[in-house]
Length: 227
Image (cartoon, rainbow, N blue to C red; front, side):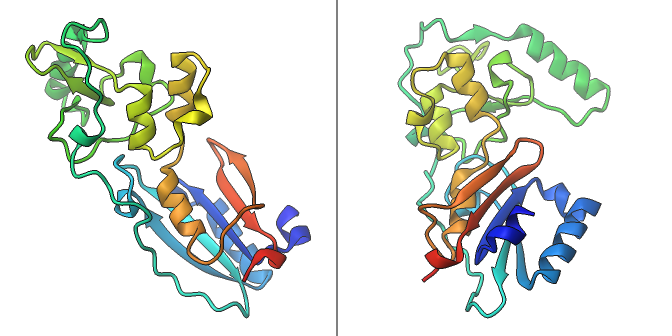
């Protein structure tokens, strides 16, 4: 009802790619079409400038009569390798840990034919996989940085590294505990991908953003702001 009442010129909705084939998405398409929006759908990810390899479904709904052509371009130059992001952590820092239990779990998963494997990264890595809300729990399928000299040791990415990988302003989590900073960084969307879609036609200085981790995010742009 909020969309119908506000009647935004353009709105951007995002969610996981799998949402594209759901009944809910089908209903959204039908409703927006009935409200005279032209729909543009695209799967966006690191090609728009983020280092994290996270795919997102992005729907751009444009009011009929507005001149719009979807031509997404990178909004920043992505780092060539993880070396440009990694901080200089001393080799004897307490953040390095032995992960024997994760190594053993990886062996068991492989023997059981599971499609899980550890994601070990270093400065030469060209991307990192998805980092979730529970990253601080040292989960087996999320990126762990390899120790430069001792292969038995690994560490989590720092909050600063996570913010840069996800292209999120680290000031948004300043002052919080490390665990909370990681929790808030974890489920965040690949911001450059979503902002790239939103910036495709108009800037959104007063756009409203709503949604939860489960429902995705929606940004709406009032008609008067469109140039």
